Image 1 (cartoon, rainbow, N blue to C red):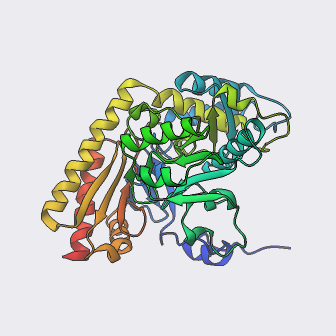
Image 2 (spheres, rainbow, N blue to C red):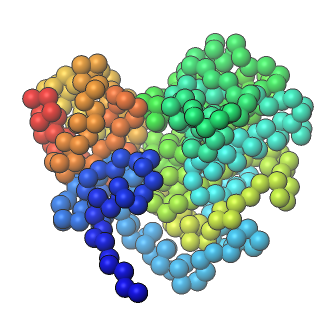
Image 3 (cartoon, rainbow, N blue to C red):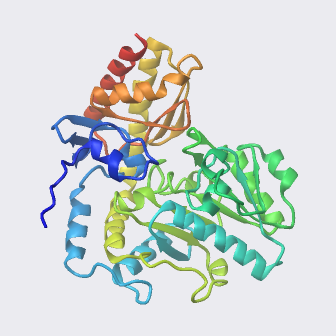
Amino acid sequence: MSVTQTPITRELFNEVILPIYAPAQFVPVKGQGSRVWDQQGKEYIDFAGGIAVTALGHCHPALVEALQKQSEQIWHLSNIYTNEPALRLAQKLTAATFADRVFFANSGAEANEAAFKLARYYATQKISPYKTKIIAFYHAFHGRTFFTVTVGGQPKYSDGFGPKPADIVHVPFNDLEAVKAVIDDHTCAIVVEPIQGEGGVTPATPEFLTGLRQLCDQHQALLVFDEVQTGMGRTGKLFAYQHSGVIPDILTTAKALGGGFPVSAMLTREAIAQVMTAGTHGTTFGGNPMACAVAEASLDIINDTQLLEGVDQRYQWFIDGLEEINQQYHLFTAIRGQGLLIGAQLTPEYAGRLRDIIQAAAEHGLLVLSAGSDVLRFTPSLIISEQDVQQGMAKLQRAIAQIIG
């Protein structure tokens, strides 16, 4: 029986994919460095980086080589066996951080799910069976599993699915007094992003993070840093906690860890890890040899002083370009962030035009993101060239001119 092949176009998405996304009208088919090409051969400069994932750009030669080499050795084993790439990657992550132990998964949500389960399990096993409260923050984002989306504190993502996981309390971000008002001896963890990404690219203040550490210590609670978006060099350090000197008990990372190949990790200290035993948690694909081989190559490149210093330099290129645009159009009320996680908040007058600006940018050959309803977000490759930044800013300027005149 012959089957007529349907043309692979953007229209096919509307027929075969669950309608939970609203992707752009073009279909990218090729990427190299900080440039992408669609089915028609149109070229785009990539300021989106796959939402902070392609930290070394598209098809970085070292990552391609690692993937090709591992693909000829072994692809998958499950958690019944260990493998060399996973062990090497875990060793390098612990050597580069506060952590002693690593759990591998496939996405940021899975790493956070594991972190939240570990925090509760540790507290209930080691301290009290009633020590289950998790404190999190409004406008946070921790993933789309039911547990992580509930901790995230954005009802638009968690409402409508029935009863939510209990004993999760939300307070305003950067408000230490609000945390003090709700923390008690039943609190097992405080969960925080060093920079709220989806919530508008809002950095936590050093004083806030220091205060959270002190409160956790006072109440025998664990401090969990969600570094899914801020990790792997995004802020100019390998992990954002290294700027503040505030050391978490548990850290999660994903996105850029695999440079585009799905992989995530939860990192923690020995004393906390030891509460877990065989079968307490798990995942079939976690620690996949292919994923870990690519992630090891990514880590080797990113965890380099020269590259990380280059992130700060590129931050200034972006800030200079955005400020120049703002001087002409008075479009932004604030430009904030750290390293190459940057948000430009639109004035109330133009907040409703965010999607129009993003679409116009694509028409002019530039990929950019949103963060919330009124923030343009930039998460490009950590090694994007100055020429690409300048040309991308010129495209953004033309897109804005098209929208607001």
